[in-house]
Structures are given as C-alpha cells and as structure tokens.
Image 1: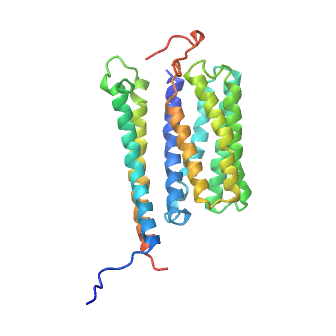
Image 2 (image 1 turned 60 degrees about the horizontal axis):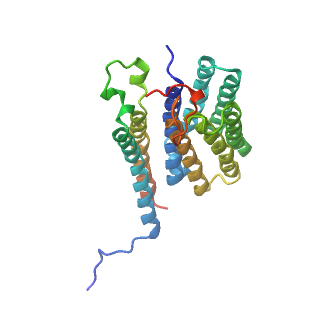
Image 3 (image 1 turned 180 degrees about the vertical axis):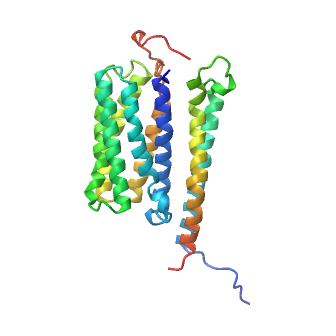
Length: 93
Length: 194
C-alpha cells in the first residue's frame, strides 16, 4: 500500500514559511508595543484627558505614534511584501 | 507656537522606527524579494532623505545655542547625503559601492555631534543621559554600516543595522525635556513637568 499524500518538506520551504511568519509579526508586535505602553503610562495619552491640553500635546502622543508606525508598516509594507514573498517562493527554480 | 523639543524627538522617532522596520523586513526576506516592487526599494532611503530635509527646519526653529545649530545642521547634511546616496544606488545612477560609506560617516558624525553638543554629565537629566547614550550608540554602531559596505549581502549585519536603528527610535521615544533618569535629576535642570 502506498501513501502518495505524505511527502517530504524541504528544509528551505520551512525556512521560507518562518520568514513570512516573522515579517507578518513585525507590524502587530509594534502595534502591541504601543498599546502596552499606553496601558502602562496612560498619562502619555493626552486623548484620554484632552481638556486643557495644547494642540501639540494632542498631536504628538508617543504610544500612538508607535502604534501608528506599526499599522502603517503592516498595511503598506508587510502586506504586499508577504504576497511578493509567496510569489517568489512559489516560482520554479 | 512651536512644539516642545521632546515632541520633535518623538516625531523623528516614529520616522526612524519605520525605517528600522523596513530594514528589518528587508534583512529577513532578502534584497531580491524586497526589490520586487519598484516603489519599495526607494522607501526607506526616501524616508531617510526626507528626515534629513526636515532636520533643516528643526535646525532653524530649535536653535537655543550655536552648538545645537551645528549639531542639527550636520545631522541634516549627513542624513541627506546617506539617504541620497542610497537612492542613487538603488536607482542605478550611482555604481560605486563606496557610496555606502556615507552611512558609517553619517553614524560617526551623528554620534560625535550628540556627544559634543551635550554639555551636561550623564545623570544630569534624562535628556542628557539619552544624548550621551545615543552618541555612543551611533559612534559604536558606525562599525555595522562600515562592515556592511564590504559585505552588503550579510543578513546578520543587515539585521544588526536594522535593530540599531530601532534601538535609536526607542531611545528617542523615551526622551523628555525635563525628567529624571534612574532617580537622578539635577536641581539645575529646572522643574519636572508631567
């Protein structure tokens, strides 16, 4: 009896999957860092207590800047990069 | 009605963080995949060049001493030079790999400027500590882009370069105008705010 479904997965393919996973995690990890920072130091988020705050204090909120950088990276950079990585890895050599 | 200096540091930290994340992902996927879309190869060199341009208004509007003006001006110049050289290399207008030496130059100039323009000791206040720390990080970190100029394909060096940039952004994010560092705050630093 043969089992043709079971195949050997080459080590390079596993490494490629790991690369995709790491790239996919960079954005969410950055966003999570900003969120955790905001939870640990809520006074850094002036949006939570906006009354009496000046314009610049409402614009520059470090935890939000970190989270925003993570969101921009995830949507603008990581998403197309992952599809390119998939295409590259699927291409015959 | 200018923003506080610390806010400008945070804004630049966000840009530097984006550059660091781009470099990190390029190190992970490799240059071949990274350059599959034409716009992407200009992304982080473009942000770096743009931050160099934006450092000029910082120099003009945040000049509280001559030495600050020289420091911000020299950062603007070397960041524009390194970013511009990288843009020229990825575009194919520049061919010599020696152009990559603009990055260690930028790191070294930035490090020296940070250390020289901070007149106070390490534990004077948080901003003084961070100036010293950033200065030495840039100065020692210059060895990484220097090594990358000779081994541009090294994933380990690319990752180290990216993580150094991310570390710089973290340091800038922790900056405050007047705040203690490990419980130390000089009386000469003025009243702590927030």
